[in-house]
Every structure is written in C-alpha cells, then in structure tokens.
Image (cartoon, rainbow, N blue to C red):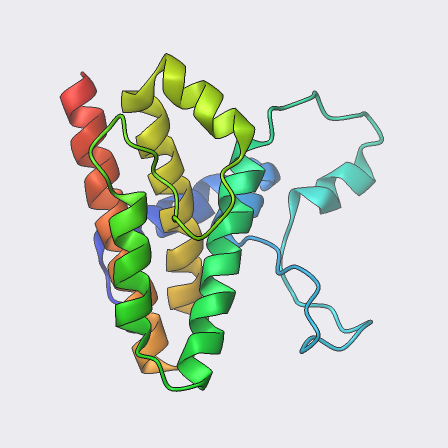
Length: 179
C-alpha cells in the first residue's frame, strides 16, 4: 500500500536477494510473534529462515542476537502503534515519537526510550557508534516498511512507510559521515 519510497525500494531489492538466500526473508518479512488475535493453528503466511533450518539439520553459528532484538523491538512498536490506533491515537504521532528516539545523532542510543535496551546494543555502540546506529535504523526500517506494505489501513500504512523512510535517510546520513 505504500508508495515507491526509498524504504519500499530497499525492501524490493532485499526481496530479490532473498530468492538467492532464503535467510534474508527474516529481515524482509519478520515473523509475527504469537498474539491473542491470531488463532492457534492458523499459519500467518510469512517465509522464514526457520523453514530453511528444518531442511538443514546443521546448527546455526552463534550470533549476538542484536538483529533479532532490533526486529523484535520494531515488531513490538508496530503492534503497539496498531493498538494505539484502535483506541483513537493517530499513528503518525505515535511513530514520530519513536522516530525521534531511533534517529538521534551518534553516539546517542538509537532505541525507543520506552523499550528495554539490549545489552549487546550498548556493547556494540561503545565500539563503533557510526556503524551500529545505521545498522539498527536500517533493520528497523525494513520491519516498518514490511508493515507499510502489508497493512490495508491507509493511515497506518502511510505512517509506517514514513517512519521507514526517515530511518533509512538517517542511517544513510550517519553511515555517509562515518566514511
């Protein structure tokens, strides 16, 4: 439902790459966590790296979990925004505040103030804030753009797309200044 914005084009490119490496679907279409509104046993319809794990019994190498933490935070923010919209709050206002939190000047923490900060984020920021902040912002932008594309409510779709664009712009600016 979103327009051909920078974030939307980025997701399109990621989808193309995901056909070559199915693990990328986890970034493009994050799995929806269990939620009371999803009836048990009804598939949600997302592709996932987990599907590839079922095909290959080899264990995955250990990671630091930062990407999963960013994805989980963005999914939680999206769910909270949808809930706030249902009770009458404007999605753009809710997401503007979140955008302010996730788009600070480095070395400030690019994380929503009302969400718990993962320990590994602080560790990575201490070592290289000009690389970590854009990575967090781009990862969150992919999630929000995924919501913008899949949600049918125009106000929510527009707000998610606008936040995705804002995060991507900020990430590119920060990464460009680090070079």
